[in-house]
Image 1 (tube, rainbow, N blue to C red):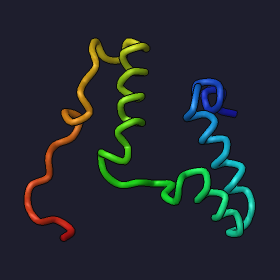
Image 2 (spheres, one colour):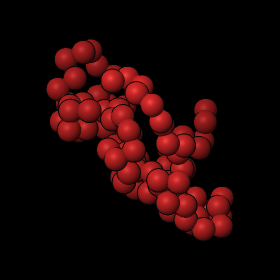
Image 3 (cartoon, one colour):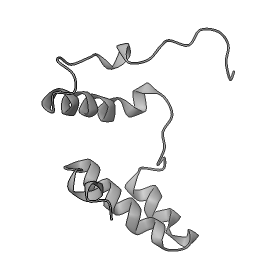
Image 4 (tube, helix red, strand yellow):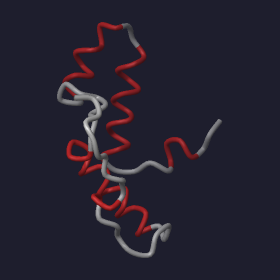
Length: 86
């Protein structure tokens, strides 16, 4: 139905997405497999745990001419000031 779904995704992200799709088809007994694939956290929060993915995204955007030059990951987000969530 959506031809871009699988054909547009390449590399490690595709393999990870495919594993997640296989894991989620079953019941909640597949949570152990999800933990193994994602090292216990399928949706990490924050810049540091996601830095490799964000850096890959920036590289792909440059390669595909969405942006002219790489942007440092630290410049992608507005810093949070204050005592939020603590």
